[in-house]
Structure formats: C-alpha cells, structure tokens
Length: 150
Length: 443
Ligand SMILES: Cc1ncc(COP(=O)(O)O)c(C=O)c1O
Image 1 (cartoon, rainbow over the protein chains, first blue to last red):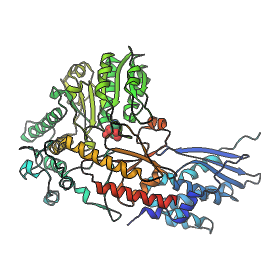
Image 2: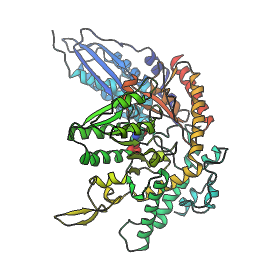
Image 3: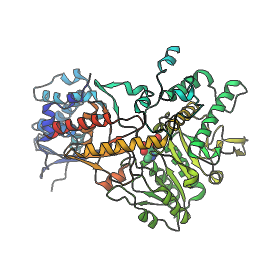
Image 4: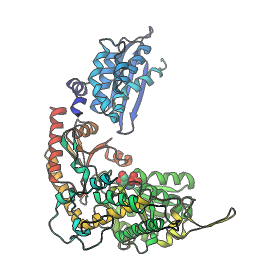
C-alpha cells in the first residue's frame, strides 16, 4: 500500500524547509529559468563553471513545492565539482530513479549520488515527476545557456 | 455479463420511485423531491458504488466533484441496460433496435428540456461537454453575428474553456475581448460589469458559479443589463447545474451550457441550450452525417434543429446516462441538495478557519459548494498529496483559471468541493488531515 508519507522522508522535508544554495550567483556563467505550467511553480538555476570546465558553484531560486525544492537543493549540492558531462549523467541517473528504473539508477552509482534515493518515492506518483525533475531540466537548459562575459 | 448486472444491484435511495425494478427510466411518484425535510445522505451514498472504496487504507472522502462527480448506480445501470438491450445507431434503422435507441435518445433530450425548462425540445443540442458547447457558440454565433471591432464581455473568473474559444475567434475575426473585474472577495461587482457593456457589446459570456472560488454570480441581473445594452448572453452553468435549479425561460439567457459528468452523469456528453431564433440563424458548426436534409455534390441543405448542430453519430448511451442522472438529482431534489451542500460549506469553513496557517480564498457573500484555500509555507501540491494519503481527494493547482489566479496573486490553491453525497464526517477527515499537514511541514 503506497502512502504519501514515503514521498516525504525526513531528509526531503529537511531540504524542503531549509534548502541549500537557494540564492542567486552574481557572477554565474550559466543560467536558465523554467516553470511547471500545471502548478505555476518556477525555478531558476545558476551555475558558475570555471575555465577548466568544472562546476564550481550551483544555486537555485524560485517558488516551488517541497518536492521540487528538495530536489533542487540536493541537486545543487551534487553538482559542485562535476563537469557538464558528468552533470548530464547525474540527471540521467536521477531521471531513472524518479521513473522507478532502479537498475539503471544503480548502475555504476557512487556514494554521493546515492543520496538521491531519498526522492525515490516519486516514482509511485507520476504527476509529481514534473515537480521532482523541474530543477534538473532547468539545469540542463542552463548548461546550454552560457552568459556572455562582460 | 450477468455477473456485471448483479454487481451493480445495490440498495438504492431511490428504489421507491421506480418500484425496485429497472432504474434506467424513473417513473412513478416522486420520492419526496424538494418537499421532504430530512436529507438522508447515507441513503444517497448507498447509490454510489465508488464511495465504498478505501484509499491507502482510509475510507475515500471524495471532495473533487467540481472536477467531475461520481456516478450513482442508476446512471451506470442505465448505460448498461441501454447497451445490453436497446443499443443501435439512431435515426437510421428500419429495425426495432434503432427505433428504440432513437426514442431513448430523444427522451433524454426531453429530460434536459424539462430540467432547464426550455420552451422547445429542439433548443437542446447535445455536445461533447461544456467546452464543446462554448466552442460551438464561438464558432457559429461568431460566424453569423460577430464582426471586427465587436465586443465580447467575459469576467475575470472564467474557466479557460470560456476564454480561449473567444481568443481564437478574436484571431479570426478581430473581435475585442473585455473582462469584468473580480474584487478581493472573489465577486464580480454588478456595476463594474454594467460599466463595461457598451454599444459594441454583442455577447456577454460568463460563469454562473466560479469553479475556483464558488462565487455565485448575480446572473439574472447581469442578463437583464446585457439585454438592455443589446447584447446576447451565454451562461456557463458547468458548476451550477448540479447545485441549483436553473430555469432558462425565467433567466431569459440566450445560451446556456453544461457538462454531463459534473451532474453525476457520463463523460463525453454535454448540453447547449440556445434560443430557437438564434440557433436557427446560426450556421452549422461541423459538417457530416445526421446534420443534413439533403446532399448533392453541388449543394447541401441542412437539417432542422437540433440535428443541424449534431453532425455524426452522437454520444447516444451517454445521453441516456445523462437522462438518468437528471432523474436522479431531480428525485433527490435540487433545493434539498443545495441546502445540504450549503450546510457542509458552512461547517467546512468553520473547521478550516480554525487552522492557523490556513487562509480561505474566496469570501463571496453568495457562494456554493467550493472551498479553496492556501496554507502559509506549504505548497498546494504537497497538501493535496498528503490529503490523498489519508483518503481525502481534493484538487490542487490553478483549476484552469489562470487569469483569476493572477488576479488573486496565487499560483495555485487547494480546492475541496462538495456534492450531494458528502458528509460532515468527510469534512472532519479533511480537517484532521490538514492538521497533520501542519505538523509535518511546519512544526
Ligand atoms: C466553470 C467551468 N466551465 C467549463 C468547464 C469545462 O467543462 P468540460 O471540461 O466538461 O468541458 C468547467 C470544468 O472544469 C468549469 O468548471
């Protein structure tokens, strides 16, 4: 019997209530904003990628439900130190988790990305998939949207 | 097949009105309708098989009837009996079944006519739903009567289905759209509406009841004012038809639309009521079979009303089901349903007001069956999800009324709505689940 409480384990509630990296990055190199038209949520993701092509800082901002907020918060923590290619792989992994594809999620998983499992409850609620992946998709858009250097 | 028939034989609040036999057509004396005093909600609930379901181990508290209402077994059984015994295509056959199906389809139309107190049977056009009916009017009335610069007056609380068809028409014809403003309580002040009626206003189209806030609009006065300004009026009765008696002749509206599925009837069927002289003057909406008098490759003459607007094979069984739904609410009594729901709304308003971080959205003086709210610091989606885990089904989101949400400055609300089968115990379940939400997300 599924129960919504599974959707909100302590770690998710904690990220939802005290989101990490909920801010703007003044000197960000990459930025995107997107919304979830079904609920009016919107999220902005900013990244600072250095010359060596490594994400040095990641942050998000906007208005969203606990799931979307927790997912964004966790994402920003996981992104730091990754290359854009690794960030995209991280998204693939998260997407597999949210879609309930445990095998794909676990394939070659490291300790860091195992932290994502707190959001595994999402797969039982297909309508919440969009909430959980909103920040991630915005991050992908940000990777393609380099800000012109002033 | 037999098993399925027995499966839906359940105790019925309405058994007495059809003598306990077939319930596809209700004959016989009224069970009490609007005259009886005591409202036996448990007897009503026994007619709705789905209300016996449990969700996540909790009894289902279905508080989303404004999105779509559940079906009594009288409706389910009417469709079953129709398919099992009377089904064929209509208006075609020389054989008994087709004649029977045609008669039942026409009978459903007469039930709608009586339900709305329309003058003529052919003023009732079956559509796929309220949305389809509004699109029909926008396309056909728009084609016949609206030209560049003509104005259509809406209100700020309309459902997207009463906004987008007019915007599509604006792109085609260059009409001008206006919207009467909504005040902070969620009402459409009559004087503001009147102020926006002008010499170019050809049509005013607005909801009877707001699907987001439950506001009951003063439609009688609005219709009168629009007529004085020389405009025709379309009433979107999607959210009112299951809660209050509607008399299209007394209202004198020119068009009125609703959906069967919000009236405890099937999906895929809706109604357009239109005054005869207007429907007569309007061109067909769609072309096809059934809507013609004769066709040659050079020239086609159209069938008389209502067939002119019912191209193709219509939703026949759904019309029969809608007829059964109308029988059902009529037998329970719309005034009694309205009074029961008003009691629930008042009780729910009182209980939810006691939850500190919760704010009720929409405080119109005239309000029906809808309770929208937000909770400080908790997103509506998270609230609805938690309520589901306690068996409480509500809707969360913008409710297909984004302009209204923008006016209210809210991206989304949680919405609980009440129907003829809801109980104070379900309001208690809602309240207790919300108290849990408060503890879980805020403490
Ligand atoms: C006020 C109002 N108008 C129109 C509609 C559209 O009804 P349907 O989707 O059945 O066509 C709805 C349904 O939510 C509604 O609430």
